[in-house]
Length: 212
Ligand code: MD3
Ligand code: FE
Image (cartoon, rainbow, N blue to C red; front, side, top):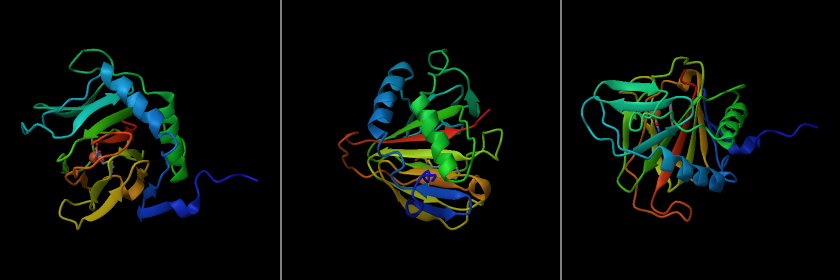
């Protein structure tokens, strides 16, 4: 007998290609948060500047071979932290294993992320509607892990003006976006003032990508 990777009743299709795995990372969450603490002592969380000159309210860092950055010159992936000149910290094996398992549970075999963006939201932080399109291979999915304070995630369609829907993302939830949903517009509504036992007033999101 083979055991399922994840119970069918906890897997929810949001859109063709997009799959919500409620609580998929719950057991691993304390390990993930401890690793985030260590990683961000080496590559500190920082507020990047958009090409338009705005300071992002989300604080960001990265681990893995490539890291996502933004500055006045644009958005791109870099092998080194521009603040220190050092390579981004290695992706912990617990991170890559979780991302590969989540992708498999959503129907995407052999996902091997080379980039993990670490996002930290404080009360009042938001992420405006955007597409993730700086990655080389759009056939590869994106895996997103939510930790700490609950957020209202906003997602639309392939066009900026398509109607948007809202989704509550809680501690331990994982969403896999691929196939026809890979280029959907998405964002995060302003985080409410709240508290979580493991993260205080913060929400963390890990976004795993095959960027290179
Ligand atoms: C839907 N982060 O870092 S993750 C980002 O919660 C980003 O921090 C949000 O959007 C966060 O770029 C949302 C969920 C997510 C990630 C990628 C997607 C949703 C997506 C790509 C396509 C469609
Ligand atoms: Fe995004």
